[in-house]
Length: 266
Image (cartoon, rainbow, N blue to C red; front, side):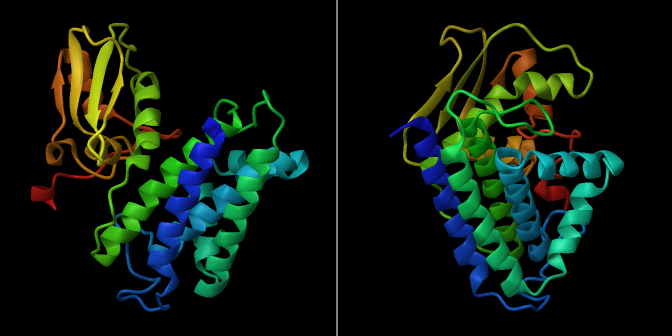
């Protein structure tokens, strides 16, 4: 199995899990599609609408230059608001139509990434991405929004080793987390050792590095997607750069987020 096949299979599994979570909900605001989520101003419908829109936009990037260019122009016209605008527009549709839209977008995206020319990169709002990198980014966002929906419904999703894709992205974006805040990107290596839900260990960086981050891979994924405050994780940093990184970690592109407050402050 190629790396792209692996990530796409895990993306499909993550999408199906979230699909199962929302498919039986009604249009109510208590336990249904209108239930508020931890994302300010977004209910469950907004979460699914955002995933559908982003999957559709990725398909445009892979298959339709004119449609992709139009998406970029729309984003440039409202750089601070276009994400919320598209989420609200999608969320206004009947929930069965929205679910069908998201299912269609997921299937089309998988096909578009499989069919994309080998060795070429897709355009995106940040740097261009290979199909595997795009699939990894879509996994990260699907995983993160699934946690928002689960939190809104008061359920605990199973912890699976496929979270390693979020971990991988969170480590690779360390420099961006610093640069995005106008901070000098540290040059000293950091050894990362994180325990996956199944008991395996995801490691990165030289084992003899003076600085390190250790703990749960699941907690690390929650932190880099800004779904949890650092104080509510089991992550341990050794060294000033590693410690600062955990304060500002961010696996997604775009403006730096504020993250979640500690549980005790909610």
